[in-house]
Image (cartoon, rainbow, N blue to C red):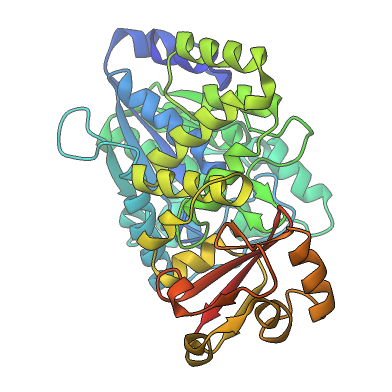
Length: 427
């Protein structure tokens, strides 16, 4: 199966310039996708383009990842409602280095013929004088051509308008394609469907400047089945950086996908072949409550983004919080990682010296913490079998806990009912 066919059956392909598929089937091609370094981490919204480059490389072509150190100073106006804040050079350099580190988890970089390559457009723009640019490059594209783009039209019609800085973005991205075509033999630019206008501008540069031929391909913008923006949660974006979004939360994002979304996303965000995906979906449909598709999707993408160990920890965390999993996995975690696991869970601190002398269960629940508002309520729930400590049901109100009950010599996990957890930290 060739590259375009691969994207097509996975439901990723949106627009393709005539002749592109024929070119890719005829020869090994270098092609690129641009990533905006406005932050020091990519998020799941970038994964479609990352997967596109992976498929491109697997099909025997050379992927080029362009990190826009120069364009990042301006900001792409495409379908944005307002102008972005501009970043200083030091921040951009940090972001560029961070993005390359993340991309290296997905792509094979190196000096080989088909190894992935990273470029930074700041390298060819930093010494480009403004007068030279508008004289040599600006004359190639008319204002009429630029104004006809939907992305520009929408901004001009909006309340905030469009600054000249952002208007010039189209020229700069177009020149990027020309530069990579001329110096790195990049014959195709790829990107999300919102980039079609900018990409086509690049092919026009190449045609008008050197009478050359270049090609374009875009992928669909991914949305949830309910129409909401993909990759956004109540707490914000889902990042690929484990410090911004923990592997557990990352795993949960995919695990919580609806059936329709999971069936769509397992094609887009995994490398599983068609036959395996169809088998997973068939197994899921036979018993939807087992969430077979979601589990396969979450496992695959968590391991590829983070690691097998991170996946195992995320799985054990889920089993602990939502099933009958044990607490053993906490022994392998640092304190900050434990806090991440219990993010959103009420936390209380108690004195380790007092705990060493022993604390009665009712004092632990109502006096030393506020798990219950009173000892009376704590007693009632405990006697009714509704209280567990460290996943073991407390049998009576005379139970006493000491430092021997601490997990990692630091934590006690109290449970009120089946789903209400409390983290008690001994200091």
